[in-house]
Length: 105
Image (tube, rainbow, N blue to C red; front, top):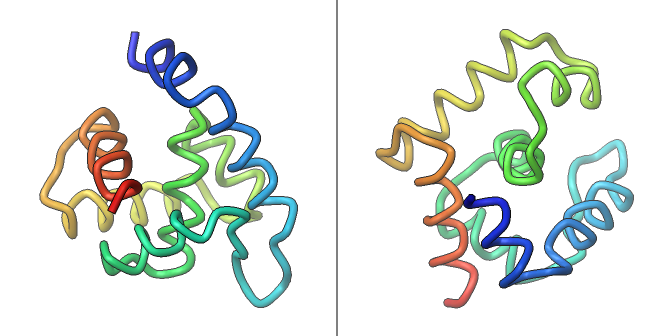
C-alpha cells in the first residue's frame, strides 16, 4: 500500500534513486537530487548509511543491498539498525515518512 502511494505521489522517485546510484564513484555517493543530500545531512547519516537508506527506500532487501554494495548482509543490517536507532524509529514505513517529511524542507 505504501509503495503504491509513493509511486502515485512521486512517480519519478525510483528514477532519481537509480540516477544517484549510477553517479556513485569510489569516493562515495553522489545524489542526483541535492534535496536528498540535504535530508541525509540533516538526519546526520554517514555516506554509507545514506546509500543503504536510499536502497531500502527503493525496496531492496538487506541481501540485495549487500550484493549491490559488496558487503555482507550482516553489515547491511548493522547499518540499518544504526540508522533506525539514530532516527528513533522501528520500521521502514517510519523511515519513508521521515525522509518525505524532510525532503520538502
